Length: 508
Image 1 (cartoon, rainbow, N blue to C red):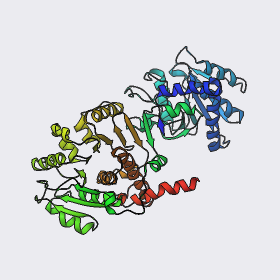
Image 2: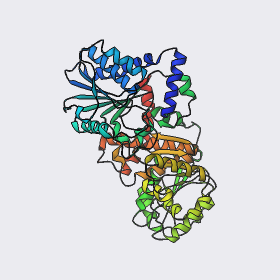
Image 3: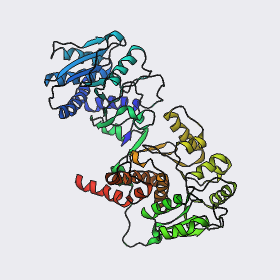
Image 4: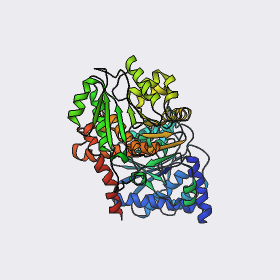
């Protein structure tokens, strides 16, 4: 699913009016009817008090039209207009006149803090104040209104996006934002829905297809792609009947140190569970017996160092290298890491301490093969890129780093984001239970396994991130969020792949 910018969505509206030969008020009526039907399905005529807060632009026009539909269906509706400017959109004015045709209770104008009404926890609030066109922070008495809504305890539904939230630019720190419980968003989710400092404002969200011009949508270059089960199906590469283990690659997991051999174990196990033909773990001598006895399918090579990696003497031509989990950052390890990277000509996966080594020894970046994959969490990313002031700046810095060094970045988080130059993919699988030690090692094993199976590195990162999250989702159905461990997640890779095609069969 494409995630478009606010500017692109405005262009899509205009393209739709032209291609479908309709007016903007026709499109607004289509949108408001869709939203009303969704609300009506849930409320089913319940005798609740509905308070609808409308801005004076097109988002407010949507709100007035929704209010009209609800009044016509017998709901107890009070409509408010936030009189924050002298300007009104033409379609707002049309719907302002239309609502007068169905009720004697005209919308109540709010001009200042003293006008803000009381809101009960039993009320339903519909937020139609600001949409994607907002370009300034919400302050003053409007901020007080937002705070009243947020503090009321009323179930709040936002139209297109929570008012005060910016769609695809950095969120001002001093701007008030509506905290929605549910958001009905149009055509596609917005980039800000998936970022750490803004994503919580939407509550749950639902994408409504409002029938925008399909040609424009197809041709639009998206700000990002949202990776869903349908996207993952399109990436998956089925195995051939007449094949053997050599056709599915050989992963070399260079990982672990004393006290952190589990990192090597988790990454190697995930690699074999994800379909690699062969997996070898290159570990300090102290981890050799642990690996051999724990995962019989994984071969081992013991480094000369007892407690940490000291050297690297293996021919890398036949391997896909996964390097970094739990290796530490001592001088000996840095030397072994540098040697391994220089010996490899094909893309590698670098995680954890491997990223920390690159951050502290930036001269090594020139030796990282093109289209290699780095999988940092925020702490590792900050050491690599420096600090950022907003989630949007974080994405900008990651994009520039990817261009400069020709590498793929997987920014791990609630919605992990894969970036390669100007391409960005947002993962939609996974859950909070996956915030557990070793989960990133499992992700490294999955992605490196896909690389070994000849997936393009970018698609290996995108597909691997989705399957990692989906494995966690399936596991959580049995273990709950609190009971998830990284090793459990790894065991559900197979079911996660099967689920892609079970869903497809059900849809057919």
